[in-house]
Image (cartoon, rainbow, N blue to C red; front, side, top):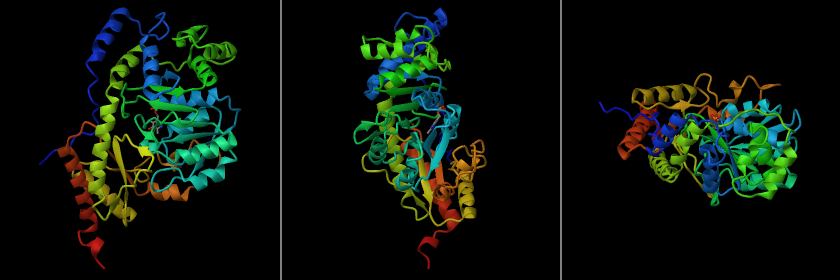
Length: 402
Ligand SMILES: *Cc1c(COP(=O)(O)O)cnc(C)c1O
């Protein structure tokens, strides 16, 4: 029997990281603010800002920390309402609560993207918006920015899973006021843990830098080039803000920096893998892969598809049949305690959210990992297993029957 590919292992960390890590093990220089300049975390911030084309970047301990600091840096009052999609990872509503704000959920369509009509209907009741590009699926950022700009509502992009995705040629994470990325192991760049936020707004970044743990005058180490605007912003924020100490350490930065050169290849290969498997799945009458929106160029490392014409019982049988063929499929709404199913966010205050459209999508949306390193043979194995699993359950004739 052919063994199904392991889709969980990450790629090896580039060899170039080793010398830098050895140097740090020798010197013990792990804290970002020990060196007078050019600490690995500082260099990472400069390189990441250059990669995305933003003025500023701040590396922190996770994307969740970046989202939390973004809300704090906006200076939102306690109990401010923050609109988030009903389909996202539990860390997103959690970061809103952590920032003493209240999450407001909006509907998501069967293409995994924000339902703009429902989003609009809730917009006048909120003071900020987090757009979570869930699994890298980009919502209509033109519509969202027009609607939010017209009301003066700040947009934070949760681009945790969207490094390398573009919208109308612009990098995802640079369209809203702040963009947040993750370096957790299941994302495109893997440091085990870590996150980074990008922005062109000096005041926001200055406040986030200080709250991330740049105590006393450590903020000066974020001024690698003369920047009067940023310096003035630091001076205004000095001693005004709490320190949450969510810094990244130099070891993590040393693991991340050489991977930035790999981003382009991972994006190219991940997209090709995704589109190849998507075309195969779309030949099945029982599966449908939602199309991307026209301005979007994706950077996927997994594939999501909807089951068509299957009952809940069929859906469970399909996931079992795929597993028997070595491919793990997670149906977001059916797997127990799934952190991406909003009804499992029991920690939300107030009445349980009612989002029938999002719920219906989650009950038939499947998720399978598809890392960039897979070969064509691996992809065929995965696609075959899924297509045949659906046939096992639904019967070869049923789609075309009476
Ligand atoms: C992974 C992920 C997060 C959380 O990132 P961490 O770095 O683990 O905090 C948030 N949002 C989305 C969409 C994610 O995929």
